[in-house]
Length: 420
Length: 220
Image (cartoon, rainbow over all chains, first blue to last red; front, side):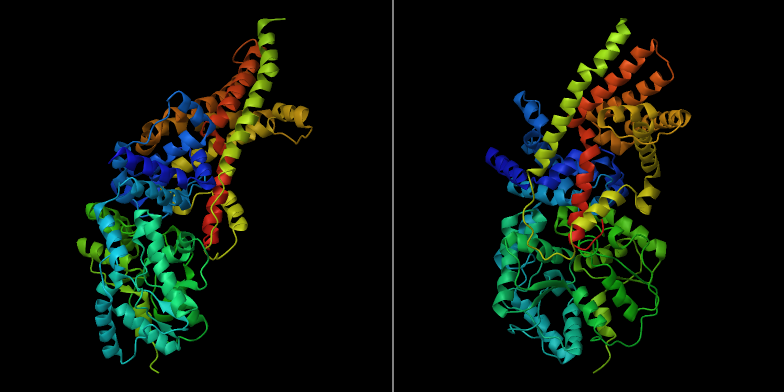
């Protein structure tokens, strides 16, 4: 990369340093406990995957420019510099071996929110051009076509036609003034079309008014994964515009973890203002419908079921009890993984790792942590509520010859609805 | 007046004032350079407040979650032993309380000397264990730099010289006490410019952590 790219990267890192970052770096005593919280270290025992060390580029900028001692050292040229070589070396550490699952942030004894800083460091990596090719391609496609997988509305329309013919129901499109604008993820449309049919049935059953938007159906945000706020802003703005145009009260993020954190938590800050609508994950909406008695189910699954909490939904967004309430509604034999909820272990594919072909092997190695967790409770099936997690679970279980099907919670609820 | 007495008076007088001034101004500068950075406004609808969860995390992060304790029990226990030992000896050794009383005018009951003695020995052992772990554990070896060993050394010296002075292992006594005070002064001067600042900033970091997660409805 050129000197200009490097300077752009350093400027982006500089712009990301705030009071929490300064407090976090001031407090790190190199105890290394974050490594024990990281699935990449746990499954490789390679110290380079120690989470706090992944922040070295950001730490160097902080130390040199935001501390008194660093500035004094700078006068004598004693600070370690951020170089193009350093950023190139750190690229796999920041993108291939970190899913931004935030488990280290939950464990650090001095309270460092390491994931918060990984997100910020990626801004510098993207600005300096040190991003895995798969993520760049996905982000480019998302900006150009609206979908990181290049999915067009016409493909979704085919799915909608299937859903309508199989359910006998209508999938509302571009309906103004309804309660909910439903967003999807391309991976869901392609890999798990049963999700759309499930919410169509559930919302019809519960009398919920909702719609899809032909202007914008994609909820995922490659800009956030790559670490580029400009791209992130463009993608969130599309959702905002669609919701405002249709005058909806709420936007529903699909069974996708990062889409939810992108729209729910980062989105308003990316566009620089609060939303005139509220944002929910589909699981929150379903639990609300359950609590208000609008979902009536019959029968229960009687095989041994366990659940994978998506990091973005549970640890990073506080949606932990809702999915358990819903499981109670439809499952008789549910057993939690030993470390779950805010201490759950990541599947290994989040934070853009699944779009990064270079990380494919490492992603599968990291999955061994989840595999070990699943083996501990020996379920007959796994339930989850994120398309990326679900794909990783399915691929991982297949890779290790474990005959454990994975199902989405929304479709499981839909299967138990009482006929009207 | 003997040389050792002169040394003691120097460490208790001029040197102590300088060390205290560098510590206070340095630490103030560190806190200012953290807080002046501030935080960007957050427009996302909050699930909960920040202060309560932030303050809870300041307290709860002192205790490892069961999974971490199972995986890193040695780390957690050794950390607890020597941190707690250091704090007990600092604040509950009667001569330390007398010193605090003479400067700030407040005092509290101390622990009997033999108890403090035993805790000091345990603290020293904990610090040695922490050093050995740092030198041998692959992650700690990978992370550690000069500053880690410097901060360990200045901390260890404070406890060691205190232990030596208490047991009169160096004579004459004014020299032993002077060395202890000198090591405290080195500790105070080094503190604001190294990761020893975590003695103060860790509470800020924990608050931010708790506040960031708490706003999203997660007790971190």
